[in-house]
Image 1 (cartoon, rainbow, N blue to C red):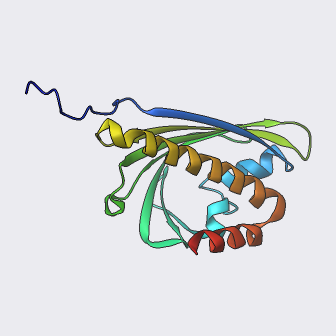
Image 2 (cartoon, one colour; image 1 turned 60 degrees about the horizontal axis):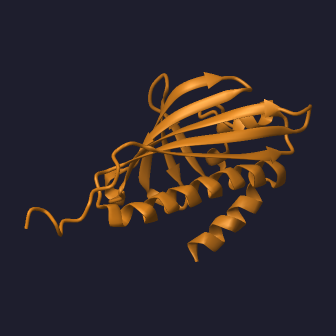
Length: 169
């Protein structure tokens, strides 16, 4: 009856999530850990990164070996900021379509920096009733990601492998 009982659709604009963390490593070290062109990228130790073009990469994570995440570098300012775009693989069947993820790194001395992570999350069209859960999930994933970066930078890859083993249980 005139659309009275139809489910409302979620907003179409991207959701912006911003988080920051202090890391006890130099800005240069942390930048290397987020730069896909650098072999010290933190995901290279828990997966593989393959360069596919001047500014494009494929990321395969050990936790999800059957999925390839295409990465496009949008901005790279050594030691200061890095921005990528990642379109999620269709086989995930996720409501999340793509993310644009940026890292701003502010040096706080020779062995400390502040990292501000900004994510724009773009979703496939969905009903409003699913939207809040999807936004909560992407916010949790962003929090997980920045905290894993901190742990990896300060404690090493073995600490990350232990966390990921728990996540797989």
